[in-house]
Length: 162
Image 1 (cartoon, rainbow, N blue to C red):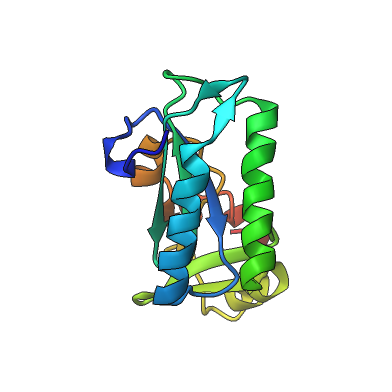
Image 2 (spheres, rainbow, N blue to C red):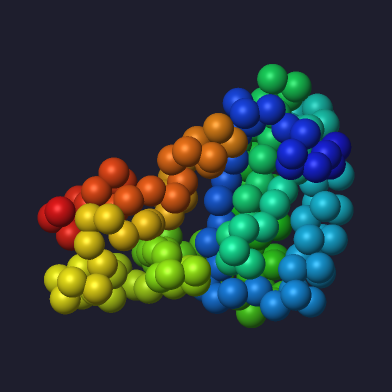
């Protein structure tokens, strides 16, 4: 069952899909409509999942479910991954490349490879205060406080030896 993301509680489970590039307004509308349609029928063991989504920075697609209503199962998570893969194929995008790292550059979000990320840090273009995106967080509450964090406060610091 689709619900707007703002109506989901803080304990809701989330999955963050980072796009390889900024989405256009037309893509946001189309992908949003397809995501809403997917969420309308998303189930786990024949139980309807109370689910929502949102886009952030025209780059991140965030799926959310209230697991107190019905919890996600391996099969339901697989369904969501197949849905994301279908979006990749249809729109020629990449949402699943976990070896790309996002950081804020003034008011823009930049996405680079691990090697580029390490190089930017070694050249001083990124530092411990640079804002990075921790796409490994698991709840809506963490999205508010632990998603956009200083590199020094993130697992990213292990990549660069900060």
